[in-house]
Length: 123
Image (cartoon, rainbow, N blue to C red):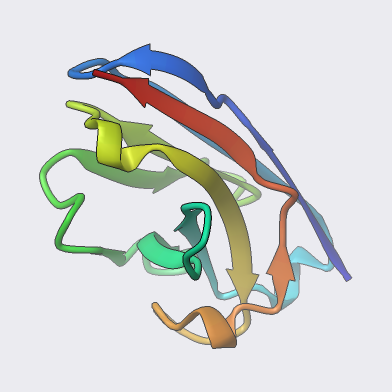
């Protein structure tokens, strides 16, 4: 099992920044990729960003390219999502997830999920 704990959400004005953190524990050796997904009420979780823990390769949804940056710490157990130039449409619950697959952006290939952290961007 892998446990994921997110932190760093909150309320911010449009144009502002937030940094989300996701700390992984447990059988982290089984994780190849960690990703961030956004759930807006009434919609499915959408892929936002992912990072391959071994090679550091990153992927981003088109909607966040140039604004969000995903990174990992040297121990490869904590992943961050730096969110800049936030827009009201970025509002929702952000989930951290872990996958044994390499560089995947498919939610169905993520096995472990955190509880989520709320991000609210006011206009």
